[in-house]
Length: 496
Image (cartoon, rainbow, N blue to C red; front, top):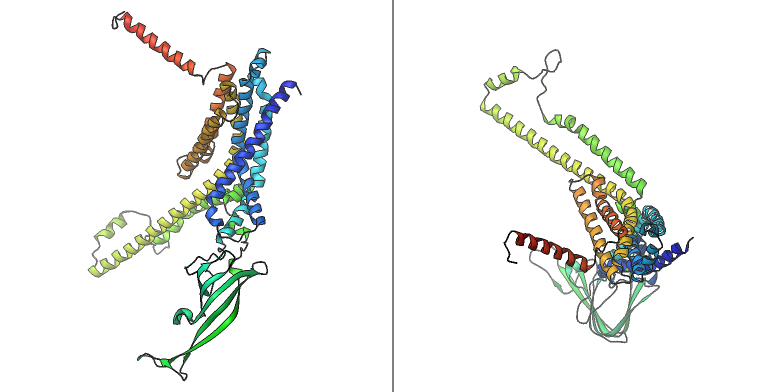
């Protein structure tokens, strides 16, 4: 390996590793902030968070690689240009294309790595990450009791606390304990306590409520029993209310917290999504959907014939062909009741045909959109990998042109081109889903435009273009101004 290649390698790998780590961290934090409300008040352990961060870090790698490649290649050649190392390389007779050759090989290798990562690792990480996220989102929040507000998320209980002290002591507790019939007959069991505390046992599987110095009120409701009762005039049997009061100094309740734990969902429920499939699965699913679409179109006319009653037959059991005999039917005199029956039959047949046509149209449209969706994701496996190489073709010549390293101008330019890649990709996907563009055209729209942009920058870098220098544009507009001024003077429009 030549010293020039070593120099360029060393100037590239440092920024690449740093920018890759920063970009993955930024994308990971964006996802975590987006779902922060789903994590609040959930009894999650450190292992659950670690697994979630690990899965989503893998998910962000294919998206982060193009941006990291763009920024690191731009910084590498920007640093070489800023410290006149690139000028020395050109003075030695080495072209900018030859200087870019070692990083071009690295860009090809990273693109191949991105393709296999996107095809093998990303579907697995998406399946694991989003299934775990779903389990977290559907898990109930842990007990968060606020002062003076009834807490009703614990099944079978309504709990109110006047004050929560820092040491965990609960002052002025009111507990409504609901039985199976409480929702029909009202609150039949009430516990009042001066103080108490709540804690979990057996690895948060059970909740213990300890109460001190209180009273337990119970209302037993019976039908047709002796004792004090209240009955309505329309009731056939009397409803008897027996009241019971028990004072206590120490009272303990134990309830299961199984409904609050996070339950793992069967991952097979998420495998239908296109992000959970590799290229082979995407191709198979898209082909099956297109076959179903073509088969439905082929059977559309034969299946619609059941809604028509025009197939008359002769005694020889041969179908009559359309002709003048159909027009002669219009001259046949029929009664008003028969006309009404004919119109009713025709209306019902047309309504059935309209319903069938609408349902088949919706079915065909859904099948076509689903097939395009899976095929579009299959193309994105290739486009995301190739975008790493395209971002290098943009970043390396831009760094040689602007001659600025560090995290200043390169970061700004990288963000601009990454946003352009993101917007063009989404716009192409949108046009594909709306049926405006074919799937390959929409999927490769962003890469095609940016590829020509990168080739243009390479051509400018080879000719030592001062594309981003202010003086170039000042002199250009000055020459235009002088040219038009001299032309007007020749025509005696401006006095000399």
